[in-house]
Image (cartoon, rainbow, N blue to C red; front, side):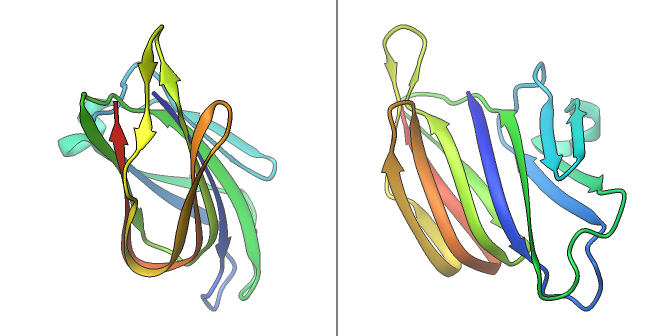
Amino acid sequence: MKHNVSITMQNTGLVDINNVFIRVYGDIDWDEPLRFRCGDVKVMERLERDKCPLNMCNLVFNLGKPMAPPGSTFNYNYSFNLYYYPPRDYFSLDILNNIKDIIIRIPRSYGINGRISLGDVELTGYGSVRTSISKRYNIVHGISLTPPGTLKIPIQI
């Protein structure tokens, strides 16, 4: 199942941001790459088992130039595929930076008759989260998420 993650991050540091760190983990679809985009930077990264111990991939993307001076915000997004196992599984995101706004889109269906819904989303740490549904996606929207924390999204198949 493909996941689309869009993030607006706030630079609370004292220097410009030159790199973005992303961690994906779980039952990763190794045949599909992770696609990253930030401004003019577009990267397609093949996820490989031997580089991701215990199915955890830690990726650093160089932005090529300073993107966000201290106090400012910038946007990036990425997509990747995970496998889920019925009747219930979950998608989890570690909150490692100050996230001003995050939107996670999870498909509502798969295959011919497969239906996907979300359980009660859990947030450890600070911020607020709400869910909504569009024609094609289950949507999780987080606002002002601060580290350390985890966003856990139960998937019901």
